[in-house]
Length: 295
Image (cartoon, rainbow, N blue to C red; front, side, top):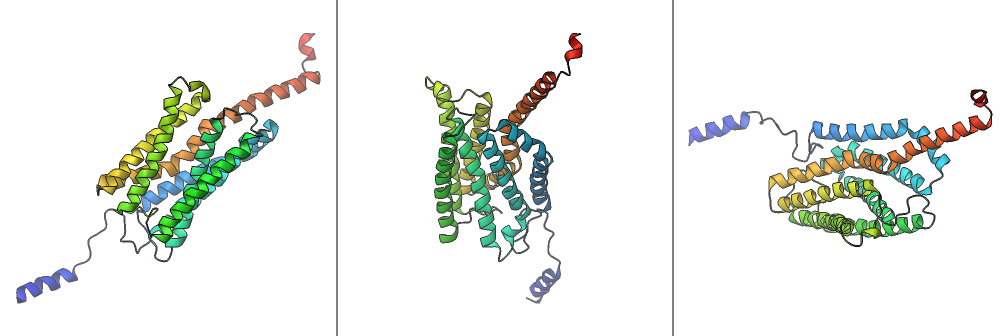
C-alpha cells in the first residue's frame, strides 16, 4: 500500500505534459493555436490593405462609371471585409471566460454579413441586369435582408436560447450544432446545384450568360458539399469531420472575399481603365494634340 502511495506522490509532483496541439482547455483564451490565428489575421488584413491601397483609384472609377450596382457591392465588400478582419482578430475570445456573448455576437454578425453578400450576388445576377439595377437593386437588397434577418433570428435563438455552441468549434461534438450546420450547408448545396441543373436544362435562357457566374456557382457548390459532408461526419463523432469543417471555415474567412472581388469586381475596374483611356484619348484628340500627325 505504501508503494502505491509513493508512486502516486511521485506522479503528482511531475510537471504536466506539454500541449503539442497548441490548444488549451478553454480557460487560456486560445482554442486553435498561434499559427491558426496568425494565418487568419494575416490573410484578412492583407485583403483589407489591398482594398485600401486601391481605394482611391477604384472610387474614382466608380464615380466615372456611375454604376449603382458596382458601388453598392463595393461598399458591401468593404463592410464585410472589416467585419471579417474583426472576427479574425478576436479569435482569442472564443475560449476566454466572460467573452462568450461578445464572441457569439461578433461571429453572428460576421457570418450574416458574408451570407448577405453571397445571397445578394446570386439574387441580382439571376436577374441578368448587371449594368443599371435602378429597380432591381433595392428589391434585391430588401429580399436578401429579409432572408438574413430570419437567419440571424433563428441562429440567435439556438445560441442564446438553447445554448447551442454554433460558433465554438474547438473540437466540440455537440450533435444539435452539427445537425444544424449540416442542414444549413445542404440547403446551400441544393441552391447551387439547382442553378447548375437549370443551366444544363431547356430553361438555361432564364439564367445569366456570364461565365464568371457559373465558375462562382461551381466553386460554392463544391465548398457547400464538402462542408455538409464534414458536418455529417462531425455529428457522428468523427474527429476528421471536425477538422475538415474547421478547414472549410478557415478557407471561407480567408479566400471567399478575395474570390468575390476577383470574380465580380476586378473585371469592372479593368474595363473602366479602358474606358478612361478612350476618354482621355478623345479629349486630347478634340483639343488638337494629334493634328500634327496628319500634316
